[in-house]
Amino acid sequence: MVPSPLHALMAREHSRELRSAAARSRYESDGYSPVTRVTLRFASAADTQKLRALAELDSAPAPSGPTLIAEIDGRLRAALPLDGADPIADPFHRGAELIELLRLRAAHLSRAY
Image 1 (cartoon, helix red, strand yellow):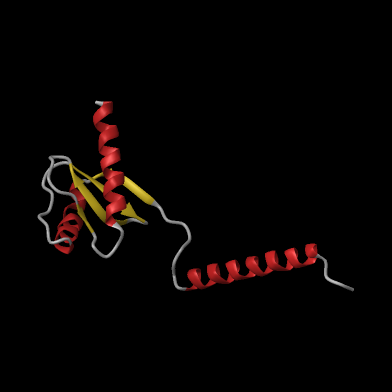
Image 2: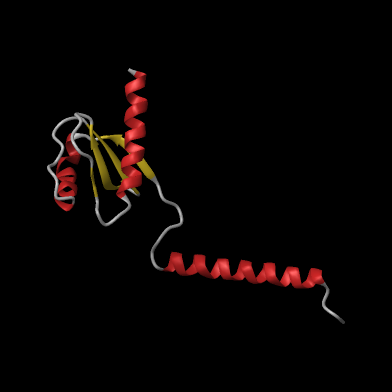
C-alpha cells in the first residue's frame, strides 16, 4: 500500500502533538505550572516588609505612600507608587510588563474618581 498525502499529513500532525505533549511534560516536571495568576491591587500595611525587600532588590527606595502592587502567583514582583515616585520591580523577573500593567490600572483608577 502506497502512503497517501493524507496519511503523511496525519503522521506529521501526530508527531507535532507528541512533541508538544513532551515539552509540556518537561515544563511541568520542572515544578512550573502552565497557569499563572497575576494580581494587581493596592498595597496594605501587611505588604510593608515585602515592599522593602523588593526595593532592596531593585536598589531603590521603598514606597511610603499609596502604592499599587503586582503579584505573580502570590509573590510580589512590582510596585507603582501613586505619589509619582519611580516604580520598583524584581530584577530577576519580567518587571517592565508588570509596571506597564500597573500604570494602566492606575490610569483606570484615576479616571474612575
